[in-house]
Image (tube, rainbow, N blue to C red; front, side):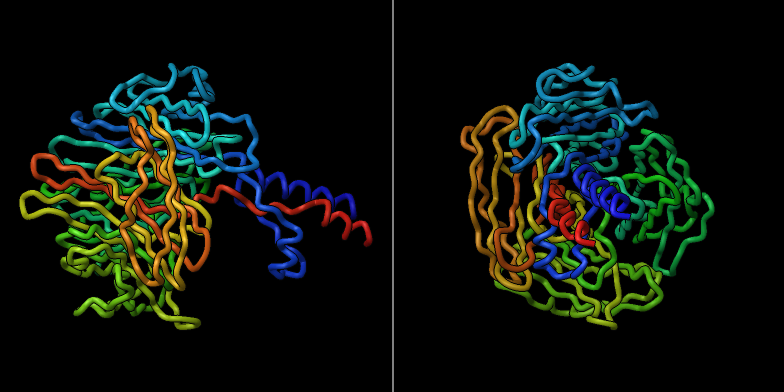
Length: 517
């Protein structure tokens, strides 16, 4: 019995260190006893999956890979990135310097090839310094990637695409996603003006089987086409939403659930008149949601929300402004019918100030889990651009976002509960520069677009890392802004915690307890 128990503990510790998902609580269940028997160690392996960036021949895409510096990591490690073409990713890019089958590190603005035509090469030399590469055209594939050793904790890959003309013209961006088994996307559409795809990417050696459900204002949309979609190993499938239903729905909630295997999922939303962007999955259904970083010059903000259970929800709507939490006039509450998508036009909600939306749907037994996202417009009629802000998880310890420019980068931070102290590090540039750091204290209930540190002597793009040092909860998002022929193009990425460390049992203390039995 003792031998079996000891093997279980050792196996759990190894699993935790490799995957970053396993934890073990102490028998007593108290925080104090947990601290005595568990240590926070860096994860040793991370996965990222990037959807095919565009079907436009006029698309130019930049990829940036970044890992923040983490204490206690192994000195070894590598990053592998391969085209999701149904082939094994064994011969993809390797660790720093030359890649295993790659051609060396690329730079923004200079295509360097990769594992197949149009695929980028990203070969980091050390944590703390981003690397970038770019591709062009409609043939750029979806990517599957892994980082191990010192490159794994907090690894992120940013995909930013410029489309010169046509449906979805403008700036489209997404942080390459994590594989999982369930995703929610409020804010999609099958309206005539929209062309929306849900991209499903499978990182594993076996096929994944996926169901895609659509919910409109009247409830679930009947369709058998979305049931049992097969995604081949190491492959990606873009599914046009309008092929799953005949309904013309301006506002939809997409639910992706995986029967077997796992995938990464993202929605590419293209509008014929208002540009387009990636809609990232919202955080899991919850009774309190935070949607951070609404641009202060937003001309129209639409809230799309959905209650996935059997109970209706009454959402209390508040705006976290620079001065604190306020209730928007005329939009104090929103009623959600269970299983039906609700969209509410909030107008120019921020009125020239930084802001984040805070939604609550009751407390205790009366709380109803919901999902939500914002569709945001900038610019005037005829020259408007679209982006999305999904509800996101807080930065518990640390989060990073790559692909930032010296100009046109906005970092939005929101503090809830009590005031929060954070440290923001601007990394070295992808082509040169020295990292720099600033510290901020945020007032409870307030949103602030902070004055960013910029690397000294910056060349190329850089990464931002947000670390919560003390206080309540902090939520973050990054906006990239550019202007094309008078159109204020932009894209927003939220910053959930990077889960770069994991609680691992301290076997020496656990063993002493077991040996007495």
